[in-house]
Length: 320
Image 1 (spheres, rainbow, N blue to C red):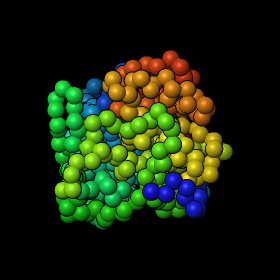
Image 2 (image 1 turned 90 degrees about the horizontal axis):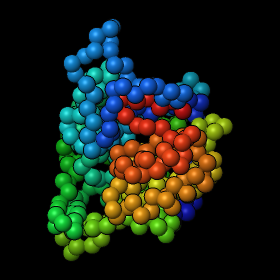
Image 3 (image 1 turned 45 degrees about the horizontal axis):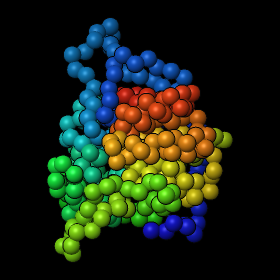
Image 4 (image 1 turned 180 degrees about the vertical axis):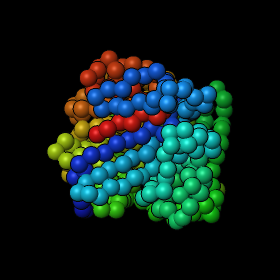
């Protein structure tokens, strides 16, 4: 990992962008829209459908960026199950025909579940941007009550057979036309964000702590407003994530922090207050926690950053 990249990413200033929540842990069909948020309609042509959008413990975000007559669409992650993302895309009427790439935030099963189906829908070779450590398997979680549990291995052969062209991104990766970038491995600089307790890895050489070096994010440069930082789980820590976005882009202003903040459960709840204090210091205009952020962190973020907080729900479009 390079914690001090020799060259800053030449991100093209984006005139407009939107993030569609294809799948997340929460769904509410009665949520109203707002200044930046469009919620899916309850009825179509006056009829409430029998089918509904699905939520699951997973994440998938469709990101669209536009500048100077150019546009691109990138998918960050593909949820947990093989069913949720395809179902929601169909119900929302969203095609993936012009998808530029898929970025895999890390190699956990709740982020690659429907990836093979996504690739088949695209129907042609598609870059799959991921860190080398996402592949290889041998991941376990030592749980204080449930014992040692193995994570499903990343089925890279299945993905390549479905059309994926792996792009190994240990370092920052700049997308086409510079409209977006994937971070590569995130530098860990804060003292309080210490990773995932109990995570270990065994690839034949003995069990070692799994620091999840494959954790990465997507970043956009919103013209005149600052960075939009879009994480998967932020296993590196959401504050480390934002700091690294500033470092690799050379842009200090932060407009939006979106995605999984990984503050769920007793191992992470003690750092909620410090995390929020650090997030407030970035002065973002939008904070939209998702997926693994946790109920208590969601409540605290809404209370402490009321004007910036946006509640994520499946099918929501956040306009930036």
